[in-house]
Amino acid sequence: MAFTAADVKNLREATVVGMMDCKKALAASDGDMDKAIEWLREKGLAAAQKKAGRIAAEGMAYAWVCPDCGVGSIVEVNAESDFVAKNDLFVDYVQNVAKVVAKDNPADLDALFACKYPGSDKTVLEEQNEKVLVIGENIKVRRFGRYDTGVNVPYVHMGGRIAVLMNLTVGAGHESDEAVVELGKDLAMQVAALNPQFLDKTQVSEEFIENEKRVRLIQAKEDPKNAKKPDAIIEKIVMGGLNKYFSEICLLQQPFVKDDKVSVEQHVAAVAKELGTAITVNGYIRFEKGEGIEKRQDDLAEEVAKLIK
Image (tube, rainbow, N blue to C red; front, side, top):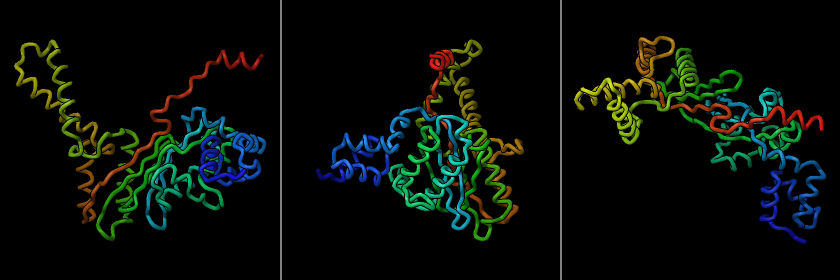
């Protein structure tokens, strides 16, 4: 029985196995899908299918900058346990995925998985599936980001719990200045620690501001301390609080962590003046491993009961 490219695609989706192995399985099974799945299972390749359904909320966030071209990349790759996240094979995979992102500029996860894995004839997805089989846990690339212009400075916190990629623009000839690199790292560390929602207050939408103002006005009017205050005074108090709020949620308006007497914006300006050049903070990407993923809650008593049956 002949098989088509669509059959290969369907088998790949069903088993999470690489394209070439799916083609081999269909060829060996005369195009029969069920037999092809059995063939993959017999070869130990479809073991990844079962593991793929398990929750992977641990893992590693990693940021990297190519020393040759300056392109920066950041990735989050998840695993099931913190123990595996420290495994050298896993760490090597994460770091190589970051290099692929920097080099190949994939449009999305599917494009990334189809890229060639460094030092191998496999794709990133095929290498991932192989790591699942060798390590014995579900592993998956969750997200990635990339900057290909400006000065990129990476920062990895606590062995990959948080990673930040900071992107700056500086005047020509100052790209490698120690003060610029130090500034980028200081800002990346601040982003890692304080997780600002916005780069600058000018990026905060009117909708966000109006909603925040509405909520704060309701809270202020319900506060017994404000019972006798006119609405105009209450609104003035709310707006003052809102301006203070910007210094909490916007990086450039936050107090600089190494000198809280100045804002980040003021510190950047001071470094630029000292170097005699312009410095612009363009943006940052911050990944925290497992962020937003519901972690598995194991029942210890149930696990022990399983072991003694």
